[in-house]
Length: 120
Image (tube, rainbow, N blue to C red; front, side, top):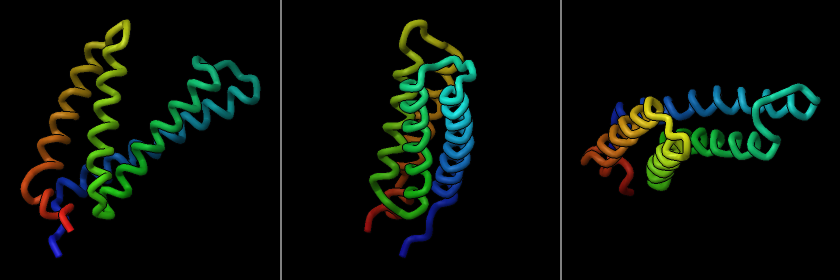
């Protein structure tokens, strides 16, 4: 059995931590809006935001469980964020960060050791 590369572990943990924190914040906003407190987004938007954050969390968990589809989900999740930052008005600082992170994900998740790890 191929040992998990450290960079796969770090990426998985990053998605888990980020997804958990972001989902927690989104759920707090959702509950506040349901109780009538003012929030910046509609309930529909908050539900979509919580769903995308949950997807990131799921990607991180299953990346650590050696699921090949999870690395593709990580790439798709980040590519989705690149597209979101391109929507008017474009957010250049966020766009740069997302493109750099997407590039790093592509580089590390498809290195030969990562390919061996995910190939069963």
